[in-house]
Length: 136
Image 1 (cartoon, helix red, strand yellow):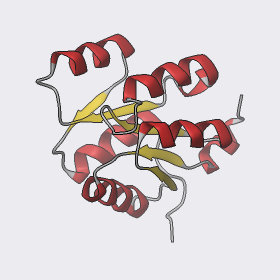
Image 2 (image 1 turned 120 degrees about the vertical axis):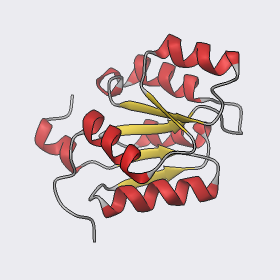
Image 3 (image 1 turned 180 degrees about the horizontal axis):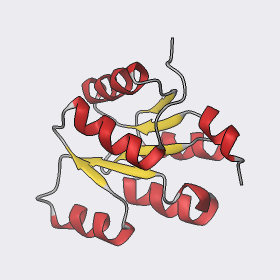
């Protein structure tokens, strides 16, 4: 387990395959003081989770590459249980029954695309805490 002081220094992992959405999230969070590491698929995000430590994960539910947000949740539950309560899903697919079932089964909070900066920051601060220092 990571000490609290160290956790605050760790970046958030953002998994999103849509470049415009990724840039929006990255810019909004960095301007609010968060350190960010990005992955363009759940499969790439899982590789990063295996290799590095993060204070939390923001993941799209559906990404190309054979892995999904539900797979990220399952991996975290099995290998990084300290992050299980530090996972936020983003999705633009809430009309899909499979997506809604996956979201319900994880119990993780989610934010629906499209969302506004203030909505993102509000839920990120609630889930991960406020950023300690501004990113430069």
